[in-house]
Length: 501
Image (cartoon, rainbow, N blue to C red; front, side, top):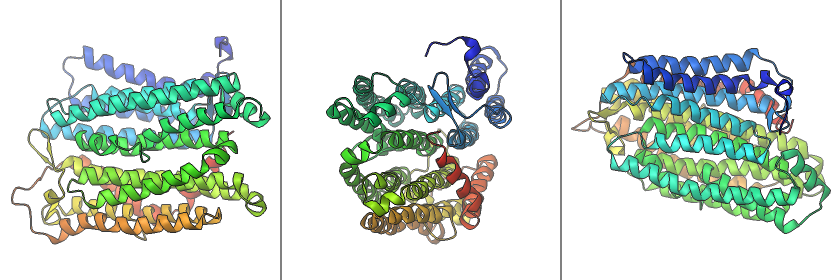
């Protein structure tokens, strides 16, 4: 990938340079401006994210590979770029509100969120195995530190340590898979790998093993069973606003990279790994929902819920692979089926991010002095009497996560399961619907406790208008996209259509 500086497409790289430069600027400002307050860093972080968004909008590079094919910029990349920047801005405001409430100022939070989003954007655009690893580790190292955001809290420190150790093992699997694929293709670029797979030359065992190890690394990041064990402990131990960041941004970026990799590796991926991925999808949905049923902690419940949602999204991947291994009729409808499944996954990730940001916004603002969070379901008893707006936002988020009609969660599942049926995977679609119905119990339990129970004698009544208003905006978008989904779904279709552009 050595090339003269004049041959580099600087216009395509500008958003990444703005974000990286902004992160370093935040670090320098915090280090040298002694009179700084946390709201100054909040404003600076927000400006960095907005400047990056402006760069994405105003700079129009030629779509396609850049930096010798190491990165690929197209609508698929931009779709996730804007989603990740939005999540980063929301998380910044949530975190700043928490620090104002508990009195603990943590300046490292601000640049770490920027660098985490930068790693995610690189991961989404990666068109080379080495860039995949670079983006993944930039994201992961930042999130490892963010997970330990409550200083002096043993649960927070334990969460970060578990995430670091298990994440290191996942990275080792990923690197080994990359090494095997390099041995198979003779290069690390997706174009070289795709050409080698298309030619059908080389060791089939090397290809299958390399892809399998890569899938293990991705499965850890998206919390697929049995690579999910870190999720409940890390989600529970991390601060609520960081838990929301992991549940949304990390999952969206990892699934974006996984979609690109799976599209690249077809049809060999479908021929070799399809059966195992079916088993993993079924296990992920079922284990996530069953364990969520018995949780007394709202953060652990949402952790197992995120595992179940990863299972639903895995059904979309299976639908994308189906034409590569189906009969003549399914192969004839291949592009149509792939488009429906891919756009369904992108729309689902958008909706899932909105409803989780709404839920974790409410969770993060409820607390007591010293950073004590309302992490037990019983802490939400009678919340509607004390804070009706927060209770309503939480109810909207829970209804959407359960897939109640009129919310984006319902339409996300509808688009996804419809694509699975069109791919001929009717038993998997039925199992997904059954699991979705099972989840209604633990989601609506939160609403029942919030609206129909006596107030907690020692209520968690943290109030912060910025967080409440922002979480309310997320809830409004959840309802708006549940009623008027056409534009967002059409953008998802167009974005998925460019995934290999």
